[in-house]
Length: 508
Image: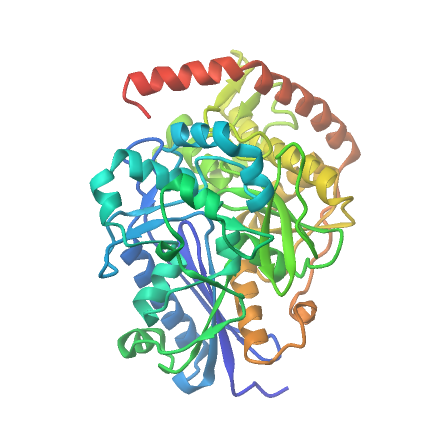
């Protein structure tokens, strides 16, 4: 089959790097590239990034991917955008940053979150689909109002990292409805910003972007940016959606009962539906995908980031993070890590219990335990967290008929098997390793008229053989999960006390 004369680009602006993929109309991957950038945490609860570093890396990733695909500027008809959720950046009247980017992992706004929860927590969740938590924008913006009042009064707009890219690249003021829906500021039923939540945060709707459908195409790339990307200035830039929901689209999991299980820097489970579904216990969230489809899900803060921390700080390795070495150590232990549990709450907790004061715990440590057991307990701790959100989501969104795995952990047969054993659920891995970037490319294809509907994503997704759970290991993990949860619940007062002690000592 001859190559299509035209291509689209999918760009995923992730936590640790920007990934760009180039696809033709037949769904063939022609080129891809990744550019990394730093996450800054000068204070333990802070997780910030340089927005200009990010958008420069994103443009360079597109340029490298189009070069590898060997396509000329005129061949690229659309660029679809994916980005992390829950980021915020204050801009002045000239569009210049007043702050660094506060990422999803930034949990400094604990007090503001508690105040919002006391004022209107259940009502906010019911209208926005976002439980009140320091991760979401209402608390973050209120923190800026409380702690940086001079900066707050100069803030002309509050934008996500994707919106900042659109400002810099096109001078645009739009925000895709997906990223808006995951901000905690967006009213699902009204389809626009929620007046009451904005009032509580202390801002007005004119300080936020114009929400638009994810297949909205914008034009007018600046010539220097277009040249850096290897595209024409008139190339359509499709606003896209958030990375989490696009991971479901890129995995082809857009039908009822299809679940995606993702572990990267963080982790999540998701199920697509045709309407928002909320949990009376507020354990799960609900964000918009595109074209009337919603994604019901639950996410954890502490995914692969915990593996890196454990390797570099807990196990005292003398070299930079080596995932394969950590994996080898873990594989040398046994399921259950010989009775060792690791509660991986290094950056607090999101779903299902939304406790930003939760902290890491190594429980059951004995003289007989080895480095291998600790390494395995780290992997199992993250997987226990994934099991807890999997169980909550299954209650809210209905039974799971099929689970597809996405994210960095799909490159680890060891971790995939462990996760399947933990869930008791077969996992199938799409052959495309960059599901969110593919999802962004699919929205671009839809915007330029290549696809009749989002269901056509199936033509681009191939699946490997299922990773089947072992019944014996699953039974062991079910028993260990019960103990894991008992330890967690028995430490609620202690989590709050140790967080207060850390604050008094200036450690958070």
